[in-house]
Image 1 (cartoon, rainbow, N blue to C red):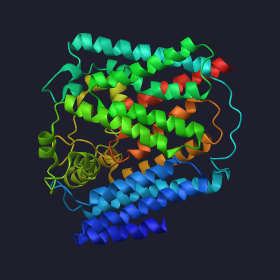
Image 2: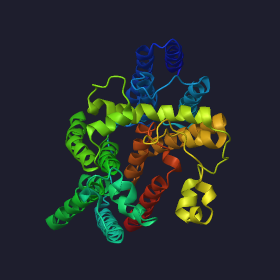
Image 3: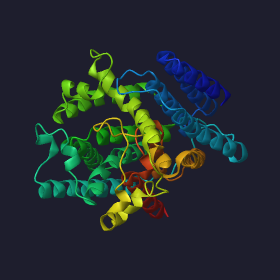
Length: 426
């Protein structure tokens, strides 16, 4: 933590004097050190605090480079909030680990696992068929499939039936379940193994038909994270291979969404207009989220006292249709097209600095208990749950995950499958 505080202070001073590249490098150094600290002592490649440290602090370092004309100097309060977001998480995790943590390393000799192949097989089949049926229903009612539309950049946003779409996108859990299925030995019947491969293919096909780059990446990333959590020792070449496969799919979906280079560069407003799109696009998707938080800090007239963070309740219960004012608060962003936010955006929107600190502490506590549970995981669906949390820590700079109803829907579906698998084994 001392290393982080030194690097953070240095980054702030350098940014104050407009030495942006050096400011970013200071945070890159902190992010790399913090991740190595947790990985080296635990052997856990996907340690939740390590991932959060690397991507939250590293993402802030990316934003500090100020490569876009959209970016401005942050207020002192914004810097303080970013500091609290990390410090609350890291210190809470450290305190709980000191008093309740075990000494056992993650890469110890694996214990014998019970087989859950049969219940996992049924979960995969059921979830895929439900997701496919929901997709077909949405396509029939709305009268189009986004992949086959041309000249409509926001076709995916319009492909949405309230309530039904949660079922459609639940397909992203299937590849991770398939990983569990085959890591546990698969079925003795080759027909079942082929059927699972077919279900996995369908699960990847649905995001492609929806032209949803995020859902496609989420499905692949969750499968990889689940594999890492289960296997414990992972060949880095596997992750590289997944990235190589995803790149052409991502580019293809970008084209299918009618997002050409000129369109994107016009939005990103990079200082170097000749910067390749494969650099400027990921850059702005990381950096501008911190800018949007700064916009919130500067422009917010009043806090909403929990209403924003409780959006999953309003959405999943349907109360948002009965009381529209519950969701009628504006989003403060620096450009209309760039609406991704950080994980702590709604916490500040609701309660200001205190909200950021309390939320980060709660998140640190939850992540500690998940890391501890991973050492003795008995139900294989727990690895899928852990994998989801790992993705949210990796993408902590991206959006308000825990005030997103889809996040809680995924958690709920995973827990239901965990209960089913546990009861089946009994």
